[in-house]
Length: 100
Image (cartoon, rainbow, N blue to C red):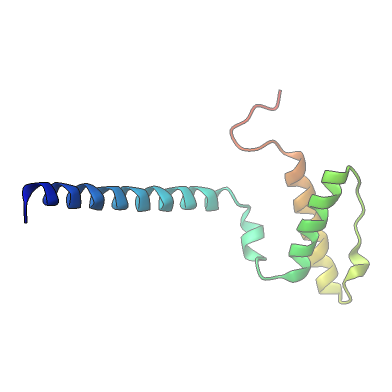
């Protein structure tokens, strides 16, 4: 292989490796910012609905807990928990920012 081709191939391999490592590091850091309760209820539709409704209500400046959307007691409790966490997150400043 010619020296120039070796150099280009080596530079390309380093670029790909560095980019991949950076993407993995960013994704890992991002996951650590997520509330563990949210991760534990990732597949719970009622919980996710509560999070989303809290987001919409916070954006609109109102608060209403519509637990009647769900039939079972377990789903209503899960919705309420998601709503509570969603409201709490909507009132907390983003990580690394000043609350002044």
